[in-house]
Amino acid sequence: MDVRGYNQEAWDREVERGNQWTLPVGPEVIEAARRGQWDVLLTDSIPVPKAWFPEMRGAEILCLASGGGQQAPVFAAAGARVTVLDNSPGQLAQDRLVAGRDSLELRTVQGDMRDLSLFADGSFDLVFHPVSNLFVPEVRPVWKEAFRVLRRGGNLLAGFLNPAVYIFDADLADSTGELRVRYELPFAASTSLSEEDLRGQIERGEPLEFSHTLEDQIGGQTDAGFVISGFYEDRHRDDPIAAYMPTFVATRATKP
Image 1: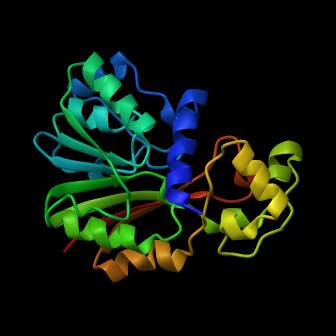
Image 2: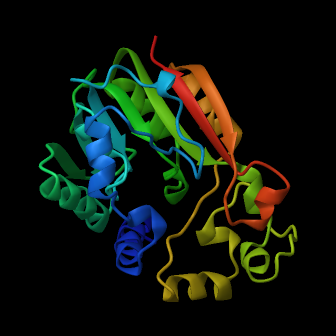
Protein backbone atom coordinates (compact mmCIF):
# COMPACT_ATOMS: atom_id res chain seq x y z
CA MET A 1 0.00 0.00 0.00
CA ASP A 2 1.24 3.50 -0.86
CA VAL A 3 0.91 5.00 2.64
CA ARG A 4 2.26 8.40 1.64
CA GLY A 5 -0.21 8.76 -1.23
CA TYR A 6 -3.11 7.52 0.87
CA ASN A 7 -2.32 9.85 3.79
CA GLN A 8 -1.90 12.78 1.40
CA GLU A 9 -5.44 12.29 0.15
CA ALA A 10 -6.70 11.59 3.67
CA TRP A 11 -5.34 14.92 4.95
CA ASP A 12 -6.84 16.75 1.99
CA ARG A 13 -10.16 15.28 3.15
CA GLU A 14 -9.45 16.40 6.71
CA VAL A 15 -9.16 19.95 5.38
CA GLU A 16 -12.58 19.58 3.76
CA ARG A 17 -13.99 18.18 7.02
CA GLY A 18 -12.65 21.07 9.09
CA ASN A 19 -10.28 19.10 11.31
CA GLN A 20 -9.06 21.48 14.06
CA TRP A 21 -5.46 21.17 12.82
CA THR A 22 -6.46 22.42 9.36
CA LEU A 23 -8.15 25.67 10.45
CA PRO A 24 -6.05 28.76 9.65
CA VAL A 25 -5.42 31.43 12.25
CA GLY A 26 -7.44 34.62 11.99
CA PRO A 27 -6.23 38.11 11.02
CA GLU A 28 -6.17 39.15 14.67
CA VAL A 29 -3.53 36.48 15.42
CA ILE A 30 -1.36 37.74 12.59
CA GLU A 31 -1.72 41.35 13.68
CA ALA A 32 -0.69 40.41 17.22
CA ALA A 33 2.33 38.49 15.89
CA ARG A 34 3.42 41.58 13.99
CA ARG A 35 3.47 43.38 17.35
CA GLY A 36 5.59 40.60 18.85
CA GLN A 37 2.72 38.93 20.69
CA TRP A 38 2.43 35.30 19.61
CA ASP A 39 2.37 31.67 20.72
CA VAL A 40 2.37 28.40 18.77
CA LEU A 41 1.77 24.75 19.60
CA LEU A 42 3.95 21.71 19.04
CA THR A 43 1.47 19.47 20.84
CA ASP A 44 -2.15 19.91 21.89
CA SER A 45 -2.47 22.75 24.38
CA ILE A 46 0.81 23.92 25.98
CA PRO A 47 2.45 26.81 24.09
CA VAL A 48 6.09 26.29 23.15
CA PRO A 49 8.42 28.19 25.54
CA LYS A 50 9.63 31.41 23.93
CA ALA A 51 13.17 30.57 25.08
CA TRP A 52 13.18 27.70 22.58
CA PHE A 53 13.08 30.12 19.63
CA PRO A 54 15.81 32.23 18.03
CA GLU A 55 15.42 35.92 17.36
CA MET A 56 12.58 35.75 14.86
CA ARG A 57 13.46 38.80 12.76
CA GLY A 58 15.28 37.38 9.73
CA ALA A 59 15.45 33.79 11.03
CA GLU A 60 15.27 31.04 8.40
CA ILE A 61 12.57 28.59 9.53
CA LEU A 62 11.42 25.30 8.04
CA CYS A 63 7.94 24.26 9.18
CA LEU A 64 8.24 20.51 8.66
CA ALA A 65 5.01 18.58 8.00
CA SER A 66 3.39 21.66 9.48
CA GLY A 67 0.83 22.87 6.95
CA GLY A 68 -2.61 24.13 7.93
CA GLY A 69 -2.14 27.89 8.24
CA GLN A 70 -1.47 27.81 11.96
CA GLN A 71 2.27 28.16 12.71
CA ALA A 72 4.06 29.27 9.53
CA PRO A 73 2.02 32.46 9.04
CA VAL A 74 2.63 33.43 12.68
CA PHE A 75 6.39 33.04 12.21
CA ALA A 76 6.24 35.06 9.01
CA ALA A 77 4.29 37.83 10.72
CA ALA A 78 6.89 37.85 13.49
CA GLY A 79 9.56 38.60 10.90
CA ALA A 80 11.00 35.20 9.97
CA ARG A 81 11.67 33.87 6.48
CA VAL A 82 9.49 30.77 6.38
CA THR A 83 9.28 27.63 4.26
CA VAL A 84 6.46 25.13 4.85
CA LEU A 85 6.85 21.53 3.70
CA ASP A 86 3.82 19.25 3.89
CA ASN A 87 2.53 16.15 2.14
CA SER A 88 -0.99 17.57 1.73
CA PRO A 89 -1.77 20.17 -0.95
CA GLY A 90 -4.90 21.03 0.99
CA GLN A 91 -2.91 21.86 4.10
CA LEU A 92 -0.44 23.98 2.13
CA ALA A 93 -3.34 25.86 0.57
CA GLN A 94 -4.35 26.97 4.07
CA ASP A 95 -0.93 28.60 4.55
CA ARG A 96 -1.22 30.35 1.20
CA LEU A 97 -4.71 31.52 2.12
CA VAL A 98 -3.40 33.29 5.23
CA ALA A 99 -0.37 34.65 3.36
CA GLY A 100 -2.58 36.15 0.67
CA ARG A 101 -5.17 37.47 3.10
CA ASP A 102 -2.63 39.15 5.39
CA SER A 103 0.13 40.09 2.90
CA LEU A 104 2.74 37.66 4.24
CA GLU A 105 5.71 36.17 2.44
CA LEU A 106 6.20 32.44 2.88
CA ARG A 107 7.14 29.53 0.65
CA THR A 108 5.11 26.32 0.42
CA VAL A 109 6.56 23.00 -0.78
CA GLN A 110 4.75 19.71 -1.19
CA GLY A 111 6.97 16.84 -0.10
CA ASP A 112 7.80 13.98 2.25
CA MET A 113 9.07 14.89 5.73
CA ARG A 114 11.67 12.11 5.38
CA ASP A 115 13.24 13.61 2.24
CA LEU A 116 14.52 17.18 2.38
CA SER A 117 16.90 16.79 -0.56
CA LEU A 118 15.44 19.96 -2.07
CA PHE A 119 17.27 21.94 0.64
CA ALA A 120 21.01 22.39 0.93
CA ASP A 121 22.99 21.53 4.07
CA GLY A 122 22.75 24.22 6.73
CA SER A 123 19.81 26.07 5.21
CA PHE A 124 17.79 26.83 8.35
CA ASP A 125 18.11 28.26 11.85
CA LEU A 126 15.05 26.39 13.10
CA VAL A 127 13.06 23.32 12.08
CA PHE A 128 9.56 23.34 13.59
CA HIS A 129 7.96 19.88 13.51
CA PRO A 130 4.61 19.58 15.34
CA VAL A 131 2.89 16.24 15.90
CA SER A 132 2.88 14.61 12.46
CA ASN A 133 5.48 11.85 12.28
CA LEU A 134 2.78 9.36 13.32
CA PHE A 135 1.72 9.46 9.65
CA VAL A 136 4.96 7.92 8.31
CA PRO A 137 6.21 4.37 8.96
CA GLU A 138 9.82 5.39 9.70
CA VAL A 139 10.88 8.37 11.82
CA ARG A 140 14.69 8.20 11.93
CA PRO A 141 15.05 9.66 8.40
CA VAL A 142 13.11 12.71 9.62
CA TRP A 143 15.72 13.39 12.31
CA LYS A 144 18.68 12.80 10.00
CA GLU A 145 17.35 15.18 7.37
CA ALA A 146 16.44 17.83 9.95
CA PHE A 147 19.99 17.68 11.34
CA ARG A 148 21.47 18.06 7.87
CA VAL A 149 19.46 21.13 6.86
CA LEU A 150 20.04 22.96 10.15
CA ARG A 151 22.93 25.33 10.72
CA ARG A 152 25.30 24.74 13.64
CA GLY A 153 23.61 25.99 16.79
CA GLY A 154 20.19 25.62 15.17
CA ASN A 155 17.31 23.85 16.84
CA LEU A 156 14.76 21.20 15.95
CA LEU A 157 11.50 21.64 17.87
CA ALA A 158 9.46 18.44 17.67
CA GLY A 159 6.17 17.21 19.04
CA PHE A 160 5.10 13.57 18.96
CA LEU A 161 2.74 11.10 20.57
CA ASN A 162 3.66 9.09 23.63
CA PRO A 163 3.76 5.61 22.04
CA ALA A 164 1.99 4.07 25.04
CA VAL A 165 -1.33 5.51 23.83
CA TYR A 166 -1.32 2.96 21.01
CA ILE A 167 -1.71 -0.08 23.25
CA PHE A 168 -5.38 0.83 23.79
CA ASP A 169 -8.44 0.20 21.63
CA ALA A 170 -8.95 3.80 20.47
CA ASP A 171 -12.45 3.24 19.04
CA LEU A 172 -13.64 1.73 22.32
CA ALA A 173 -12.10 4.54 24.34
CA ASP A 174 -13.70 7.18 22.13
CA SER A 175 -17.14 5.58 22.15
CA THR A 176 -17.39 4.44 25.79
CA GLY A 177 -14.44 5.90 27.69
CA GLU A 178 -13.25 2.39 28.56
CA LEU A 179 -9.50 1.82 28.27
CA ARG A 180 -8.78 -1.71 27.09
CA VAL A 181 -5.30 -2.90 26.16
CA ARG A 182 -5.48 -4.37 22.66
CA TYR A 183 -2.35 -3.75 20.58
CA GLU A 184 1.30 -4.71 20.78
CA LEU A 185 3.83 -1.94 20.19
CA PRO A 186 5.05 -0.58 17.90
CA PHE A 187 1.63 -0.05 16.34
CA ALA A 188 1.16 0.21 12.57
CA ALA A 189 -2.37 0.65 11.23
CA SER A 190 -1.55 -1.32 8.10
CA THR A 191 -0.57 -4.44 10.08
CA SER A 192 -1.87 -4.05 13.65
CA LEU A 193 -5.53 -3.49 12.78
CA SER A 194 -7.77 -6.39 11.83
CA GLU A 195 -8.69 -6.57 8.15
CA GLU A 196 -12.20 -5.41 9.02
CA ASP A 197 -10.99 -2.43 11.08
CA LEU A 198 -8.42 -1.42 8.48
CA ARG A 199 -11.00 -1.62 5.72
CA GLY A 200 -13.39 0.52 7.75
CA GLN A 201 -10.75 3.15 8.41
CA ILE A 202 -9.87 3.33 4.73
CA GLU A 203 -13.56 3.52 3.72
CA ARG A 204 -13.96 6.46 6.12
CA GLY A 205 -10.91 8.09 4.53
CA GLU A 206 -9.07 8.51 7.84
CA PRO A 207 -5.27 8.90 7.91
CA LEU A 208 -3.27 5.79 8.80
CA GLU A 209 -1.10 6.08 11.90
CA PHE A 210 2.14 4.51 13.11
CA SER A 211 3.55 4.58 16.62
CA HIS A 212 7.31 4.89 17.02
CA THR A 213 9.38 3.71 19.95
CA LEU A 214 10.91 6.27 22.30
CA GLU A 215 14.24 4.80 21.20
CA ASP A 216 13.46 6.00 17.67
CA GLN A 217 11.79 9.26 18.70
CA ILE A 218 14.37 10.46 21.24
CA GLY A 219 17.30 8.13 20.63
CA GLY A 220 16.86 8.75 16.91
CA GLN A 221 17.45 12.45 17.48
CA THR A 222 20.61 11.91 19.50
CA ASP A 223 21.86 9.29 17.03
CA ALA A 224 21.39 11.86 14.25
CA GLY A 225 23.78 14.15 16.16
CA PHE A 226 21.42 16.33 18.18
CA VAL A 227 21.73 17.24 21.85
CA ILE A 228 18.39 17.29 23.65
CA SER A 229 18.20 20.76 25.21
CA GLY A 230 14.52 20.98 26.20
CA PHE A 231 11.65 18.64 27.06
CA TYR A 232 8.05 18.78 28.25
CA GLU A 233 4.89 16.65 28.18
CA ASP A 234 1.31 17.55 27.27
CA ARG A 235 -2.12 15.90 27.28
CA HIS A 236 -4.96 15.64 24.79
CA ARG A 237 -7.85 17.89 25.72
CA ASP A 238 -10.52 15.33 24.80
CA ASP A 239 -8.94 11.85 25.05
CA PRO A 240 -9.90 9.50 27.94
CA ILE A 241 -6.29 8.27 28.10
CA ALA A 242 -5.12 11.77 29.03
CA ALA A 243 -6.86 11.47 32.40
CA TYR A 244 -4.24 8.88 33.37
CA MET A 245 -1.00 9.93 31.67
CA PRO A 246 0.61 12.51 29.39
CA THR A 247 -0.13 11.70 25.77
CA PHE A 248 2.36 14.02 24.03
CA VAL A 249 6.07 14.76 24.20
CA ALA A 250 7.85 17.90 22.97
CA THR A 251 11.61 18.16 22.55
CA ARG A 252 14.10 20.89 21.72
CA ALA A 253 17.15 19.37 20.02
CA THR A 254 20.23 21.46 19.25
CA LYS A 255 22.76 20.86 16.46
CA PRO A 256 26.19 21.35 18.11
